[in-house]
Image (cartoon, rainbow, N blue to C red; front, side, top):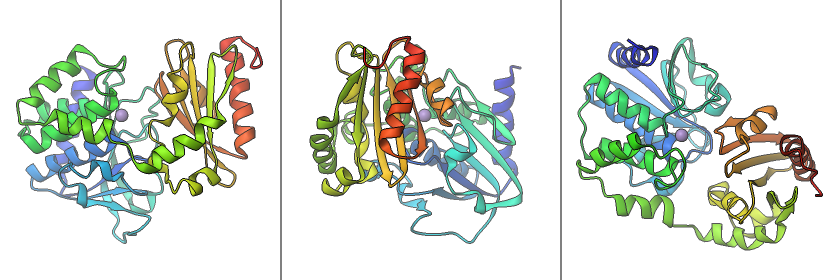
Length: 331
Ligand SMILES: [Mn+2]
């Protein structure tokens, strides 16, 4: 039995052996972590277990078509008193990605870490990691098979949504034959691909459009036009009436410019706190760049948090990219 098959078996056992669970999705939740958390909930229901699903903050409303969405507790608005001995974290590459949730863990906590990020540091007591999986939900699909869980429209909808969002609608390089095979099987359970794609990929908020209008003016090209950067200041967010929810996809306007290898989006979330989103086309492994600043992610999509001004964040990042690309930033 491979180490992965063994981890699948242990994960199923973990779910069967215990009664009450805390399910944690990662900070700034995306479609994959949200779908994986809800799929976990549905699987625990099948086993007759009880659970609480939490996120450090708000989960984007565009995912509210997913089953059990209303069960996700936003800890910023609804603090919990209970502590948990059994925790399942999904799509979080390290314990910091779970956000401020550790006060919910009992001293004897056992944590099952289910993830597909190559930068995962195996922070769980059990680690179910497959770094060649396109999404955490692809691992959840393996778990459904390994544990003999019953696939129905609800569970299939969660798994399909995670696949659609983490592959950018089956367009990114992580779209494997296996992904298409799984997606095809899931459609057989009544999943509605048009509706899911519309909700997750096509629909944009008014806040996003207003933010885009302001942000495009900040576009700078460096390194012989191989790097494109966009900046969103606190003021942009306030004037656009936008929240961090509305930032999704903005970084692609930088990366998608012809000839650009690395697209950057720097967001001043609050004074002195900057979120950096990095996307690359084909050469640069941006997860390494993110990791050098204390973050993580994938080769083509990564991010980190920076303490300091947005200008300093940008300059340090551009200097790092100069090293990696072997090109001066003002070239
Ligand atoms: Mn993911």
